[in-house]
Length: 404
Ligand SMILES: Cc1cc2nc3c(=O)[nH]c(=O)nc-3n(C[C@H](O)[C@H](O)[C@H](O)COP(=O)(O)OP(=O)(O)OC[C@H]3O[C@@H](n4cnc5c(N)ncnc54)[C@H](O)[C@@H]3O)c2cc1C
Image (cartoon, rainbow, N blue to C red; front, side, top):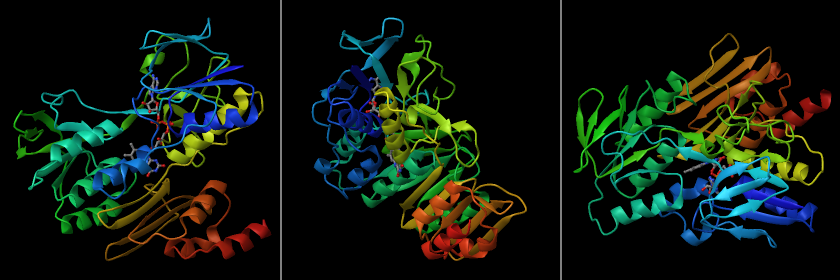
């Protein structure tokens, strides 16, 4: 059996490892569009901040896998079961996995192609920033468009390197896809104390060659570095003529198989069931990519396995502040409990006694437990206050689970 995997992120690598385990006689080829060995993208901000060495970034390729770097799939011919690459080759497959991840949004505005204007999604992006900052005694001003997790982690890294940080936010708050207005206000107050400026309801409309930025309001700012962190889209453009069904991401069934039999997809490029909301969406997270890659590979090898779905969640520590959110933490409604304090915001959202989401800012405990409670979607109404305090323990959960 000829297995071909496009993309060597966690989805592709875990699929390759699983195939090697369950079908030792199969032929596994892993194609990567990047020039480097595979690496963990989620720790790029730590690398940028100097908190880890580059050699610890790289991920191992499983043994007995043909691994090709600098080889991008450009077109899939589903009728002939072949794909074309930008190196001019035609590769045959019996089973194909698309694990191409996401591409960062980069608005096309005047000046967005200057070398000091970047996104953080890959290693060359970090190298470019390192090169720009090298040998500069005064690191200068970094303007970051967007205030989601990746923008904020990048801002934190640049702040650690001594740069002044300004966040340009189109909406009315930071972390607008994760936090409600009061939660965001706690974060913004903390950022203010750290000397970070947040300009809300603004957007970058033009960047000059000297780094002068013009905003939507007409205001101007001087910058030494501009980072666009305005979100990531599934990397699916090359599938346009393939006949593979794509909405926002590639659509797959429970076996991670696309609309074309024999072609599977996993990771940030796909839409799967959201375990809390129940709809199909892209929950672009490392653990989801790992699990989806594994499930896809089992099915590619003819071993039936189902993927239940993913959970929207984020845990991060930025500018010294811990934030843990999951599910529908931003929601409003009658079964909501909130507790606040200096630099602290706790909120749980329930529906008929079932936990639907939460926000914890400032103090984060028992992450794994809270994630599991949300994932199980069982009645927890009696424990609402303990959940809100962050004091609900594994012991209590075990006793509750044994009663069900
Ligand atoms: C800065 C940063 C911080 C993050 N922090 C977290 C975090 O704290 N927690 C968390 O859970 N997740 C985090 N993530 C997200 C996490 O890294 C992704 O969810 C995960 O990497 C997705 O894995 P993937 O295998 O689907 O895709 P990717 O890891 O994106 O890998 C896909 C690979 O496919 C390659 N490719 C694309 N198109 C082609 C093609 N046509 N041919 C060949 N190769 C191709 C790409 O170059 C890429 O190397 C972070 C991401 C970033 C960038």
